[in-house]
Amino acid sequence: MSRSTEPATPALETPDAPARLDAATWLMVIGVMLAVVLEILDTSIVNVALPSMMGTLGATVDEISWVATSYIVANVIIIPMTSFFAGRFGRRRYFVGSILLFTLASLLCGAARSLPELVLFRVIQGLGGGALLAVGQSVIVETFPARQQGTGQAIFGVGAMLGPSLGPTLGGHITDRFSWPWIFYVNVPIGIAAALLCYRYLPASRTVARRTEAPDWLGIALLVTGIAALQVLLEIGHKHDWFESDQVTLLAVVAAAALAIFVWHELRCAHPVVDLRVLRHRALVVGCAWGVAMGIGLYGSIFLFPIFTQQVLRWTSWQSGMAILPSSIATALMMPIAGRLVWKLGPAPLCGAGIALLLPSLWAMSHWTAQTGWWDVLWPQIGRGIALGAMFSPLSVATLRALPPRDLLQGSGLYNLFRQTGGSLGIAVLATLIDHRGMVHRVHLAEAMTPFADATRVRLAQFTAGLAARGLSPGEAAAGARKLLNAVLDTQAAVLAFADCYWMILCVFLLLVPLVPLLRRPEAMTPSA
Image 1 (cartoon, helix red, strand yellow):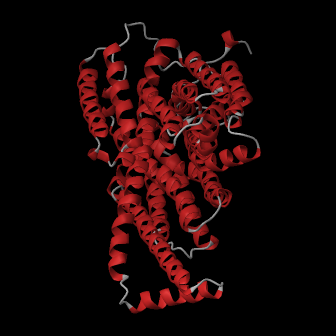
Image 2 (cartoon, one colour):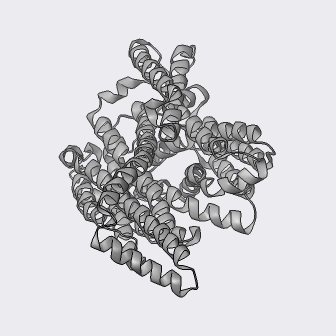
Image 3 (tube, helix red, strand yellow):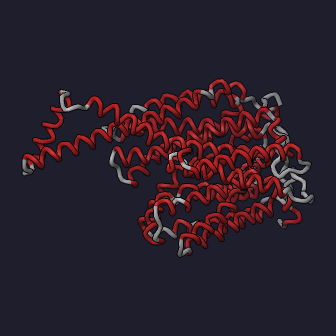
């Protein structure tokens, strides 16, 4: 089939559309999903390789963190502008061009020999990757007929949800077995395959008119300034004690001013770079609120788990990564089931059931201790994976399927922006909460651990006897016992701090309970239609 004779994908097909998709369409879906998985994996895959990069590039901890931060900042900036660029260049041309830009930047990242080079190429990689989420999800919505929307969003959700979970495990394996440049080189063949499939089989969109008016340069400048300042603020705030730092305060002022002016300008502009009027749809507003919570629940829990297992339980990075795998498998298995059920039950019952399962899973996580074993970790993780898998597809269907065709790509961009921002916000708040609550709990525990307390004397005596049995002198054994007691104090304070973090995530999802009835079934998906 030549490009000139390709049929355009039906724009939000009616319920009487064909229930079966042909082979060419499935090849297009595979190409789109390869691009989506690449983009999401590169958000987290580099984190475990940062120590290796520090040694190779001679960078400090603060400097090397920009390898991760620069990608996320560029990514979040471009997501809300995808509708503008797709309208100006055409959806297929923009999507394929973004894949090629991402792939080229990945090759350059692997070949970088200095930190400035690597950060620059990561920015380019983020600019290319930003389009892949929003455009990819809108393509899935347009491609699948109404009766199969749950299946389509389940396919998209598997990539969107598994990427953050598998990124650290895959990155650690590649870094240990080869070297850190290979976490970027593996993107090249996959990116080329995705670009070829999308160029060959992705039809031009009939839902977005080509835009020829002058670009909204002021809106672009305000958006870049505001989103960049906000994202950097969220990335470095906890490291600099938030508003105790003049740099963080300045970033907060710049972000607030730029975004406020941006909203005012976009609502008055005839041809805005981001059409905020799309938020007139209640389904999108509710979906964005859910997206923030989903970002906190997904990225926040994945952020906490490896820190807890490695710092408190003393697991290796490989053991920690393998412990995440059952949750990822549970998510992958649940999404197709939820995709089938959303047609029959509607989105609200499934999201409600997801919350009902997620809350006890988070409650169990808040009761983990320093003596927690593999089986104690396994079942709450599986419960979390099933719960998030049950909510993702119905939420995407309720949010995006309710939008008219002309607003679909813009709505998809905002929906993904809120989910990504929720993840960044959750990680920033949780990182601060771990440090702050850890210090608070240590002070409270230390107040009770006095030399006159019976429990303290018993524990010191046990430690001293054990060290003396190893041949240490009485003075050395006593000093070592005090160090061991301090280590126990630090561990217990950390356990309580992590418990507070899981309770915070639990409270976020509790706040969503009143929004469950607002997740309406889109008209095109009603069984009567």
